[in-house]
Length: 243
Image 1 (cartoon, rainbow, N blue to C red):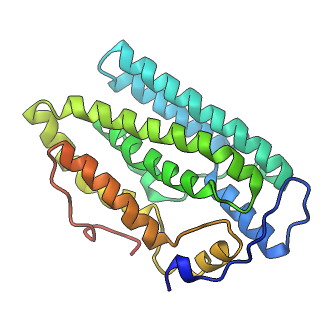
Image 2 (cartoon, helix red, strand yellow; image 1 turned 60 degrees about the vertical axis):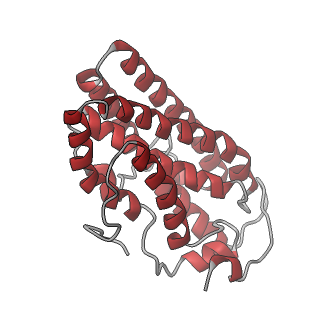
């Protein structure tokens, strides 16, 4: 069954509205998984590592400054989600939520790794924020356009740096080799195609599409970017963990 034919309740909720138990549980689960909260130490430590990578691997001061601005925008998202969580479940505010998806634990021990992370993982954030524009939870829908715009910008930042790297045969070969690690991980960030919770998220209007539908739209977008770099698209099922 496609997401377009799944049953939906057609209701919306705003700050202060009573939330049905299942709706609240799904919303809290979503916000916990998102992790962008000023009180989430794991998130803050991760972005400290992004700044460390910029210091170690960025090719020039302009690149370092660009990465610093990127981290500043992510901190802005932290504040936005902090305020959102305060309205939904205050117990989450200082809950440490380590990143569960393995894509966040792939070593980023080169400038190319960091740029591929930005290309792929920030793009994942943009796709999810695009879904939130139509969220039944209206506070999330209101902040979605800002997050979507920023995340597309972060992904494009990674792409522009990769363009520079791919200008040399050695750089292009490095990106191609690392792509075989990052590409399957990026596709896996949308989860399994048989998730049992997805129909309930769609019913309550917290999601608009199923995991596989989003994955294929994401893949189409990403593949165009990679072809423009002159790279070979890896087998979409090779080295995957979630199908």
